[in-house]
Amino acid sequence: MSVYLSVSIISFCLSFIFCAVLIPVLKKRKAGQFILSYVKEHNQKSGTPTMGGLAFILAASIAAILFIEKFSRTFGVALTIGISYMLVGFLDDLLKRHRKQNQGLTAAQKIIFQTFVAVLAAIYCLRAELTTLNLPFLGVEIDLGFWIFPLAVFVFLATVNTVNLTDGLDGLAAGTSIPFFIVMGVLCVWNEQSGLSVLAFALAAALAAYLFFNSPPASVFMGDTGSLSLGGFAASIGVFSGNALYIALVGIMFVVSGISVIVQVIYYKATGGKRVFLMSPVHHHFQQRGYSESKIAYAYSAITTFAGLIALLGAL
Image (cartoon, rainbow, N blue to C red; front, side, top):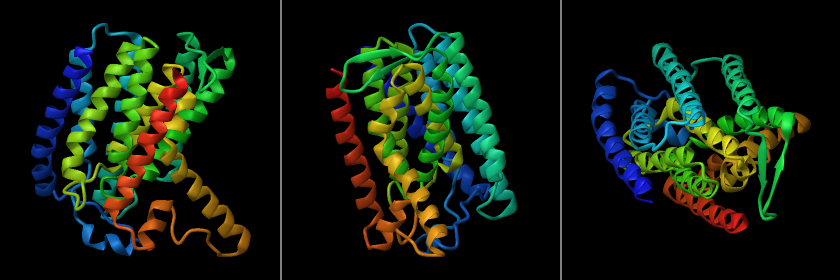
């Protein structure tokens, strides 16, 4: 237990320091966010420094490496995947800054990279024999064998994109991810996956420090640098620990973000322009209805925490 407390404290401190140092640098380099024109409520946010994900991802990675008791191959692969997503997100954010618009890598380029990494992760699952799947509330563990391959690919693609979609309001993605990683960390402790649990707690603590700067009104955004990386870490921790199904349960608000976009697009095309939501993802719908960013972020975090508690009870 002392290891998890220590890694959390160091990760929090490093993240706070990195954020405090990085924000002035980003401002000096004019690495501001270019806001989508159709989100009128965010016009005043244009120019807010982005790429803040660099601070908390590096802080969590360093802290996890320092306090890992045994550097396992699974821990190394999970760390590599998360940082890989951070780098591609960083490239996307750099292109947005260079082009001075909210368009970096194309959707096709992103999905190609995401699929490539997802396939590599799935291959690792097979080679390392990480093919088991814990069934929530049943206390049953099944061995999927080869079928872990398509499941892992799907989970990685779904998780990375839904976390990315949830990063739309001040404090939303970070506030939702903190309880998510805490719960996943506890599940990993119970499954005796110490390396993954250390990584999960490090991420939660680093995000807690980042949230100080990202709470409304945000002084910095995580950008795709942060959101893509968080999705990669979330998928890695869930799949490699055998808790892939818990990702959807604990990360229910990530799922809601993704489903709201899918429903909106399908309904829009089927009805020739009608909409289910005023705007998607659904957090923008709530914003259009007059709810403040703080209330929406709080609700997402509270629901995630509640879902996490249910998940933990179901895993007992």
